[in-house]
Length: 554
Image 1 (cartoon, helix red, strand yellow):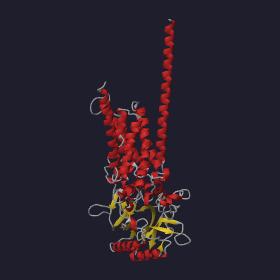
Image 2 (image 1 turned 90 degrees about the vertical axis):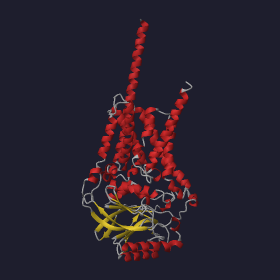
Image 3 (image 1 turned 90 degrees about the horizontal axis):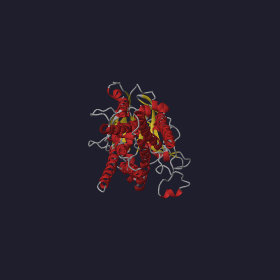
Image 4 (image 1 turned 135 degrees about the vertical axis):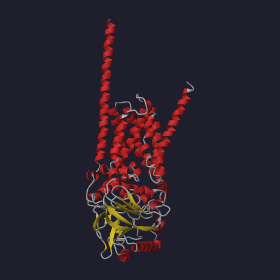
C-alpha cells in the first residue's frame, strides 16, 4: 500500500503538469503572432482525456485548466503593458473567466455521458461545444463587450476553415474546432480501450465529427475551383504614417505629423492611386471644429486629385473644442471638400475614449487622462464614395469595432458593399497586437461576404476578399507589417456576391440559439434518464423487500 500511494501521486502530478502545459501551449500558440493554427484542434483534448481516464477532483481540474487559460491570456495580450500594467493583468484575468465557465461545464458534463450510448455521447459532445459558443457570445456584450480572439480567430490564415462563418458567424468555426478535438479524445479512448480489435475501430462520434468537419470545409471548392472574373472597386493608396503615440497629441509635433502625411500622399499620387486611405484619428487636431485643420486637409486632397478617406476626431460643439466630440471616418473630395454626413464611431473604448459613469466615478479622471468623453455615433448608414469606377457604399469600422460582428452586420444590412477598417495599434508596440486585431477583419469578411480594406497607423494594413483570403498586406522586405510608408493596392470584388446577403447577415446569431437548444435538450434527456433509473432502482428495492418478506414468512 505504501508503494501504491507514491505511484498514484506521481501519476496525478504528471496528469496535472501535462494538461496544464498542453492546454496553455494549444491556446497560446494557435493565435497570432505564433499562428500554429492546427493547435486549436487539439485544445480540448488534454482536459477531455483527463476526465475520461482519471476523473480528478473538481477543484484540481478547474485550477489546472483554468490556470492554463489565464496564463495564456497573460501572454497573448502582453502588449497591453505598453499602456497599463494593471490593465494588462486585470483584462487577462477577466478574459480567463470566460473559458473558466466552459471548464466548469466541461467537468460537469463529460462524466455524465462518457459511458452512455452512442446518441447520448454525441449529444453530450455537441452540448459541451455549445457551451463554448455561448461563452463566446456573452463576451460580445458582457461588461461592455470585448470578444478578442475567439477560437475561430486562430484560423485567420486558413480560409478554408472559415467558410462556415457565412452561415453561422465565427461561432460555427469555434464550435467545429472544439468538436474535432473532443471527438479525437473520445477516439483515442475508444482506440485503446474499445472492445473491437485492430487499429481500425468504429467510433461513431469520431465518424460523425469528421463528417461534419468535411462538410464545413465546403469553402475549399469555392476558393480553389471556382474561376470568377473579379471586378475592380478602386486602386487605393494605403498610408501608414506611424505616428508615435507620445507625439500624437503634442502640439510641438503637429507640423511634423502633417508634413509626413503630405509627403506620403504626394508620393502615392504619382503611383496611380484613385483614392487614399489614412488610419484612425490621424490628424493632430479635429478635422471638423478646427478651421485651419480642415483647410489643410482640403488643400491636400485637391493636390492629390482624388478622394481622401481618413479617420479623424471631429468637434461639433457650439464653441471651439466644446462637446460633443466624435471619433469619425470622413471622405474629402478635391472640389467639394469634407463630405457630410460622415461616419461616427458607434462602439467606444471604455477608459480609452470615455469614462463610464463619469459623474459617479469622477475620481478616475486622475488616473485616466481623458479631458472629454467621446460621444458614440448612432447610425450604421454607409458612406457613398464617388470614384472613377462609379459610386460605392462603404461601411466604416473604427479602431476595435471590427471585433464585433454585430457592427459589421448592421453596416451590411444598411447597404455596405465593402467594409473599411481604420485603426491605431501603435499604442501596443510591435508584439503581435496588430496581427491579432487583423484576424477579426478576416472573420468579418467571410461572415458578410464583403471585401475588407484595412489601414493601421503603423500596421496591419492591406485588404481581404469575401472568402477571407488576404490578398495584399503592406510589409517591409524583411516581412514586418510595422513601418512608416504606404502602398497602392487594387481592391476587387466578386460580382456573384456583390449584392447578396449571407445567412449570418440575414439571421444573425441563430446558431447561438441552436446551441442553447442543444444544451437544454441534453440536460432534459439526462434528467429524464436519471429519473427513470431512480424509479427502476426504487422498484427493484421494493421487489427485493417483498421477496425478503416472503422468505421471512416461510
